[in-house]
Length: 508
Image 1 (spheres, rainbow, N blue to C red):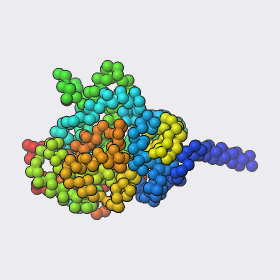
Image 2 (cartoon, one colour):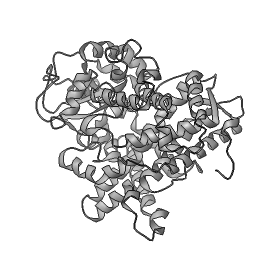
Image 3 (cartoon, rainbow, N blue to C red):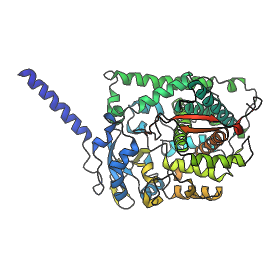
Image 4 (cartoon, helix red, strand yellow):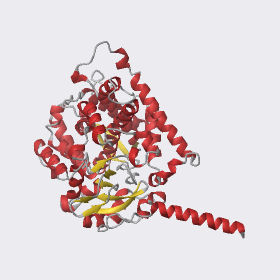
């Protein structure tokens, strides 16, 4: 009897503790609906894709009210999709302050990975990081030659992979895309070729696979408080060790990179990359070693991850409906160019339009709740939000709302952007400012690396359609990620080399 009473007592204590943890604060907004907590926890028992989850449970309340209360990262938050609410949030940085995991859950595995960096910092700290890094992230003229060289290697690796599996089987593209994205990012921002396309077993590449599996585990993603107890949850102890290994390895590789050790003359200012700016800031005492490492890591992570996932979506979209691929190939081949420059790429309207539409339909960063109210707020003049509440947005919801994009909002139609490059980019900027297109955020905190991302995507897609044709493996069934980054999972593609794309050994 005493044992039974003890077990009942333990159960009651656990239930009370759990209820106190998941109970919604009484001062949360009253005039918006609540998404049941089990929807946020579905990843624990279901493999539904996040778009399916959104369509089934979130679309209706968000399109009606523009915002909902939702459980995310261990707390109740306000999630927004109505453009006027989003622009209010983005324009008022001093009220809805940027703050990431280092503020929300500083004890967590993800906080140990990203630290305090240019993306999630606020106020004078953010201004300091921006002054240091912006010239390298927002260059008006990126050197496109390394991107072209890596794109060519990428196509070669894809063709070799197809040869290895045979023409009747598909190639799993995501691992190869990751190797390309890391290599191109390294040369463009960190002054190093990580050689991931040459060697898939480089430790820096292997660590990315482990990190991505670790960060998005549903149990710890929804209950990050468990990260406080790595002595109980041994998998979290290993997770912390992996984050530290990545930090130490990246620091060592950058510190001992050949370009740095062999350089005999100072770089011209226009040739400096982000890493040179961070190193100088560290030497001059403008940032601490901790801040230097955090910004080094966030540059590595974001400058390859978003491109990687959008390219997964691109292979799916263009591989299951060849109309888009064929139209783009016709535009590319009509140039007669085999050595594309940014000037050539930026004059191609359909290439520009398909990338904008990919970003609209498949925004890699699908949901982000990384702003906190510093004072009581009245979002859009309609939703009263107490101080200390976390607020964020859902990009697929914004981008697929018929109120913003019309009855074809959920269809892939590149032509909606226009037929002239200047008109397409004007619409891109206009919709961003209006809060209807948020693939790269907006206003003062817009992504400083979006120019590079667009150039990299254009260059790689130009080389792909020029040299290969691809179709989705008949055995592949489309499934989107269940949370975090948005992309198709496990895409398998069949590649066919085109005569028009053969290049000589001398060119390679």
